Image (cartoon, rainbow, N blue to C red):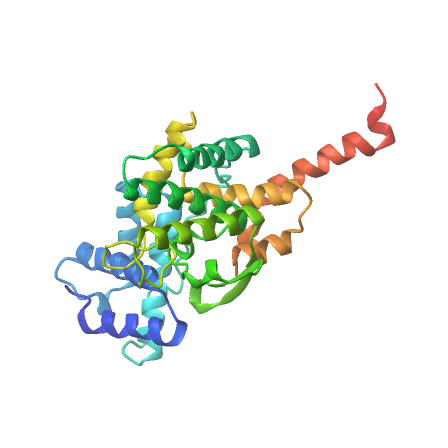
Length: 308
């Protein structure tokens, strides 16, 4: 691959100096290798601004969304900034390039009633006689995953990689290590706490994964449940609950957590902290929720709004 030595050094820098997670590093590698493939035999380190512009046009022809194009340009900008800082290049070919403007699309959100139906369906599954110990564990695991996700708004990568000690502590707060190694505290609901303890108790009773450090262990390479596996099981549960499975995902539940907090009066800065957003601008995709709440408040409380 044409990226070679420079790419590996760049990824090592991201891991060592910025604490980039494995998923982040894999994303950078894929994006930069795709650009290298577009260049053919030309080395990525000597690419010019015209090459990057042509690549972005190619992404448009291939049907990539604006968000995907922006992410790939960001990866290229970071890579060439690294080459410049290391003295490998004397210029940055991406300096004058900007990403296509993102459409102001709103995140998909489930209603409170839909989330309640999903959680209740998962809870009922834990009380349904199962054919095997493995099936009982899967049912309790899914219920625990949903209770914890909706109670905390964790990123799915943070959720599936929770340590088992999170369930063993008798505390309403758990410490999360998020993007870039940044730590934050998130509160747990009583239902989430109970579900975690019940799940670990069932695991222990069944003699499963006794030595695993993970709350949601598996036999895969990572040692814990994967994001993809959870997403598939969540869609299956949504179908059982009578919901549109195409509109249900771990990320949608994270959005529901944030939106429902704001609908019920939470401060945007608090939600930013709970979600682990480094910048308030990321959290501001939820301002439509605040706008709607303010409109309802004016219509219900302002004396002029009561007039016919």
